[in-house]
Length: 122
Length: 224
Image 1 (cartoon, rainbow over the protein chains, first blue to last red):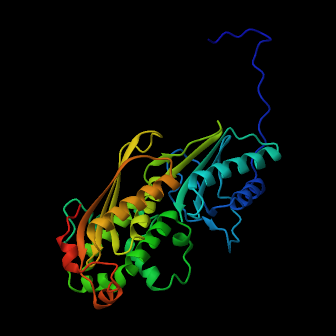
Image 2 (cartoon, rainbow over the protein chains, first blue to last red):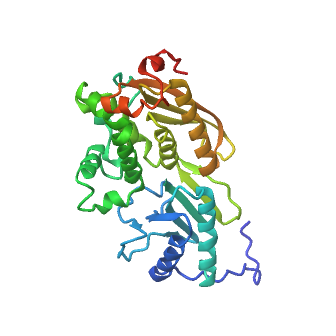
Image 3 (cartoon, rainbow over the protein chains, first blue to last red):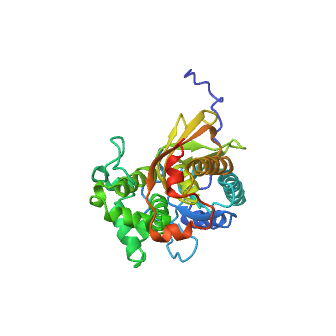
């Protein structure tokens, strides 16, 4: 339907707060604090294989790189992790989702989807 | 021991650098030889390379030198059984398909890469004493959460280890690992013993504590 009835246009929701590098880096720190997470790799914004080139992935220890590794696709966050192999990977992935969602909401952002991809275990 | 790779097994020369985030299995082996210094972030920060390095390290430490002995007696590495195993590692660690995990919220979309799962299977098998995993395959539609999946694991057993109990240990280890670390619906884990690795003198000493059978005993057992 393309009817245009004056005064009935849908109200556009408030645009979500844009993700800045600083905000993403703060979320990355949250991810790396989740028990069982050992690595955070770079995700891709395109749909499909988000692992691909992991050239800029950063380890928990010894990183000074500032570019965010969490990819943003509209209101979707894409996160690629490695786990320690001790904690069950599904549990870790679930905990990452919860932690990221809480961190995002705490800054006024409302991601509609959080992709957590486990690319390495142990 | 060690038959040459079968016709279904990959050829090292056919592998592309994209399989390992821009690296080859030879480069990773060289990197290990150099003690992983100087650090190469394109390797250190690649999950595929890390999965491959872990598998290569296990392969190298397997059987207390049996594989070195085997390598000396065989054709050049790219044609040998070990070359076939390395080629399989290269293929298995690629990210592959996305394997879904159970989500508890509408915003949650968790997955595991097929490469991570295959590496998990390989690790579970390699950790069984006297075993080197030569190949593992996930059969089934792993992209569907409840779809049944059949796991095939091909192994080599160091002579002196009893084959049937060893294969059963591999099957159990893989089953338990997948149950703990994935949400796959595993229908079956098939273990195929494809090779016997001749023991070195060191191996014979190591297995002379009565916990393992003689090579002759092992040879007499059915492989499955």
